[in-house]
Image (cartoon, rainbow, N blue to C red; front, top):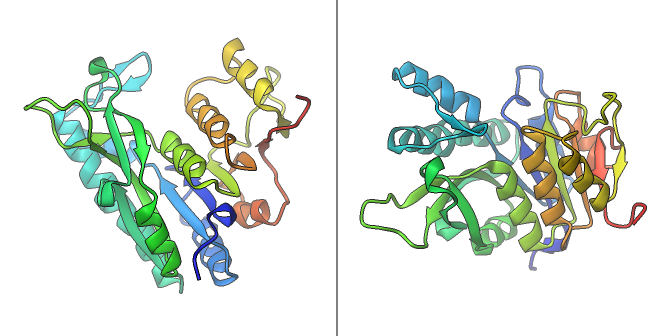
Length: 268
């Protein structure tokens, strides 16, 4: 029996949501055992910076975005495609779940081109090939996706075959492509707040766009909002919520959201 992609939930794990007391892995295993289909996308930029510093390399940024040179790219591939991905997969499997790690390179899952030469080897997603995800989901596995991409367009002879890519748009593009039921961002903040720091529990797409335009939403929140808006082209509901709280993911799936829900139809 084929998997119903419109019943899949895509979950983006922030790099700080998997502490020693975190319940996210427990929630993933429980939801899988209850028959819920999940796709996990993870980040890990802070750990990449830590490993770069061990090599005596300092991170460079252009307008707040990391520049990925060849050394940084090698570290991204090793840390995100290896260390972080396998730790998450091992944690799920050791607790009784069934997970399989996959990068955006595997099976041509995430295909991209250079976004901006000034940022180095940073990709812009051009295509998502959902076939590898379908194979894993139909075989009973939770795909755990690391955010590196196949450099499939406009390569010169000196360019690598793999690009670094932000995990937020990866989650958004996967959700949009498969027509997921829900996209959930587990972060280290309560959600999207207004200028007074008060949580905004529900936003329409236009209200979310206005928060970016006005500068109220800034920094790492911007790619998350943009990913939510992209996903809403075919995804019913998106949410940005605090993954540090106990059983946030389980509550979100069960309809007890504590963060910010962005959904078409609110005050449009």
